[in-house]
Length: 122
Image (spheres, rainbow, N blue to C red):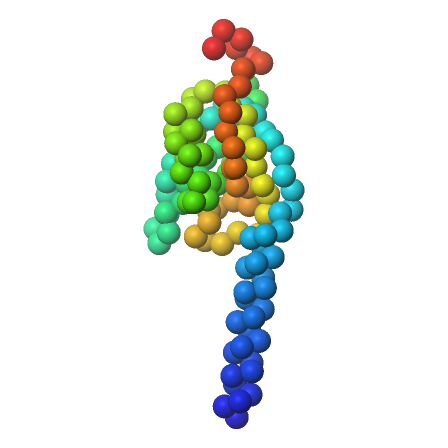
């Protein structure tokens, strides 16, 4: 009976580790988006995560929501400096997320300032 219980628990643990490794190491897609950075904040009750939004249209109808992994402090700093400005971000989309990673499946890896196509004088 004990041997069967250990085998079942071991199999469940191995499946969880395999799932976590798949989600972490295999991205669904990679790309770039640009727009005005309208929100960037640290939020959460149990686990604090960095979350933000980029407006991709002049009316704010298209909002791109993203997260930043905690092991990326230079990206966090660049986003804080550029809040309210037009930015171009590189991201990785994952198949799933965990509560301690963030609310979205999109994770920012790089931030660059960009020229707004709507307001060229900024």
